[in-house]
Every structure is written in structure tokens, then in C-alpha cells.
Length: 319
Image 1 (cartoon, rainbow, N blue to C red):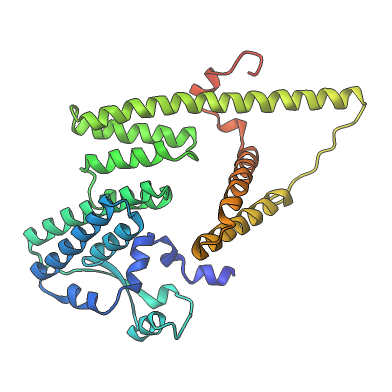
Image 2 (image 1 turned 180 degrees about the vertical axis):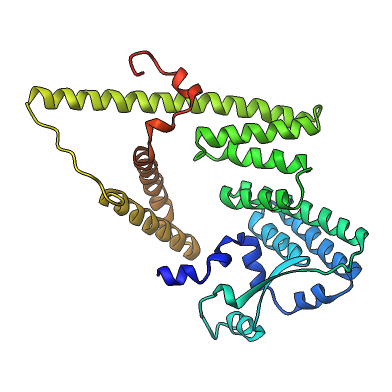
């Protein structure tokens, strides 16, 4: 397993929308090799079709089309074309390694106008993909889309705004993540101080930060009080605390991870088969997810990483 990951370290670092370009058919080879005007026409046509699906709230289909449009200008390809043919025809399921692929971008032969048009087009399509990911709650992928824009330019106020939104709307965001969200929206506002949507988002973020502090404070207070009661109970019973050095992940956490994966597989199976059991399984999965999230929070909790703003919100007793 270690050797497998070593052989595809570069591939794993590519964002998912770039990986998907490996699955696009031969028609896209013609587009990528065509003159820029022709390639841009195809790009814009696919993007507009994606916009229609987005307006209909079919975000999966819209995202698929946005990815195709993006791959007109930037894509991955197999070193050996026959490997893609075998993959698309389902005649081979060989693993993909770094040596099998190469990243390509359309060559503009130094034409500044075409280069600028490409940059603007990729910027806009990545923003569209980010919006789809946010709508589908795929926040890591949304961050990848924003980060790809930042790799191309640091002048996009929209990209800073969207990246701030990603971290703000993600319920798994830590207090540190929300601080990064604040930094991003501050950059966006510095570029366009009067943009109302940026200012409104700043208000939403401030409320989210306040709520996060309240939630974390309640969690930590409860944790400490429970620990205090447990220690007091042991003291009364004359039970000597036992300590052992934990190496690796606790077995309970490993079991919870496996259960979460199995629950997700069951839900996906019932959804794909339109099974009538799905309405019964979903509430169970949601309840389990709440317990899972609580256990992971406890497992990852480190009091040494508490932010000063959070510590200031604690009562003197808890401090």
C-alpha cells in the first residue's frame, strides 16, 4: 500500500476536476489542438449549457459540464493513449501512476490577447465550479477550485470572497479556519470596499465566529465538568488512575471510521437503487454522524491549540 501511494504522489495532489479530464473522450483532443478561437467557442458553448443546468439546480450536471469546459484549456492526459482507450471502454482497470500521466495546457505561442482571454475564462469557470461544490457541500473541492485561481492570480476579489464563503459555510470549520475566512473577506473588501455582498458576508462571518465560540465554550465546559466529576468519583472510591501511552489511533476511533464508511456505502446503494429503505436509513445515519462528529472532536481536541479569543470567553472556573 505504501509503495502504491509513493508511485502516485503527484497524481493525488491534482484537484478532482483536473483528474476527471482523463476521462474525457477523443473529441476533446480535437478541441485542445484547434486554433484558440475554435477552442474558445467550444469552451463557451459548454459553459453556457452548464449555466442552464445550474439555474435548474442540477448542480452535478452543471459541474460535469464546467469540468469539461475547463479541460479545453488545462487537462491531464495519458502518456500512452491506449491506456485511456482501455479505461473508457472498461477493458482495463489498471491503477494510474505518476509515470502514466502528464499535465498539459493549451499553447498560445506568446499571444498576449489569447493568454489573457484564457486566464479570464479559467478564472470564471473555476468560480462556477466552486459555486457547485458549495451547493453540494463539497467544501474541500470548493477550496481546491479557489486555490487554483489563487495560483493563477492574487487579484481576484471574487475568489477571496468565495474561499471565505467555503470556510464560513462548512460546519466542520475550526476557529482557525474561520480566522482564515476573515482574512480572505478582508482582502476582498480591501479590493472593493463598497461591494455590498462582501460587506454582508462579513456580517455573516462575524455571527458564525460568535456562534462557534459559544459552541466550543459549551463543549469545553461540559468536557471539563464531566472530567471533574469522574475524577471526584474515583477519588471517593479510592481508585488509582491508570495511565498508558497510546501508540497510534485508538481502536474505538478506527471502528467509528469503518462504521461511517459502511453507513455511507449503504445510503449510496439505496439512493442509486431507489430502495424504499432509504427514508429509514437516513435518520440512523444522521444520528450516527452526530455521535461520530462528537467523538472526532474529543479525539482531536488539544487544549494547547486554543485561540486567545476563545480562552477569553471561558469562565474563571474553567480557566
